[in-house]
Amino acid sequence: MGLDSVISRSPEEVVLTPEDERALNESGIDLCGGLCSDGVTSFRGKVYDTFVTEVTGESLYQEWLPPKTVGEMAQALAACDPESAKEFSGLDERWVPSPGEIRDLQTLFRICAERGPGIIAWA
Image 1 (tube, rainbow, N blue to C red):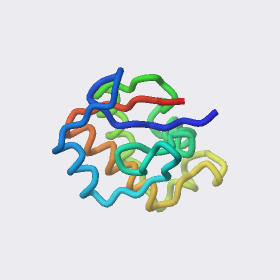
Image 2: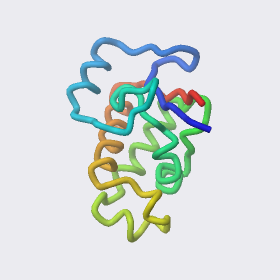
Image 3: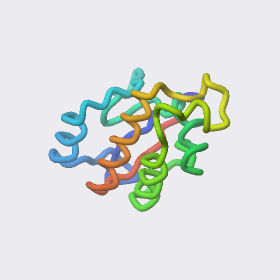
Image 4: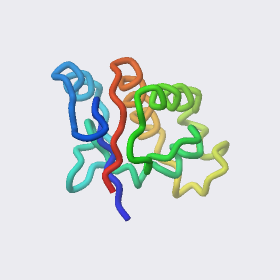
């Protein structure tokens, strides 16, 4: 099963302010995209779910990750050292994103925590 993770202010439909879109687009984030995801305002959550769950205790497969939960996830991700994540995560290295992708996940979750959107899971 696939999973697109979409940044949104609403659990029912994709809602972003122009300022949200600008902050995400100007951030330099370049996560794995898919047919319906661009890697910036949405991304292939399936690719990152195992790692994100290991680090944050929350799965990207939840239908709606509210802003409060995303903020908690942002704090957990911020504490992860991208350079040593493979050694300390306890995961098989195929499930650990590259250091650049980890930094992009940290940036995306930080922006969401600061601005207020949550994340919709479209499986």
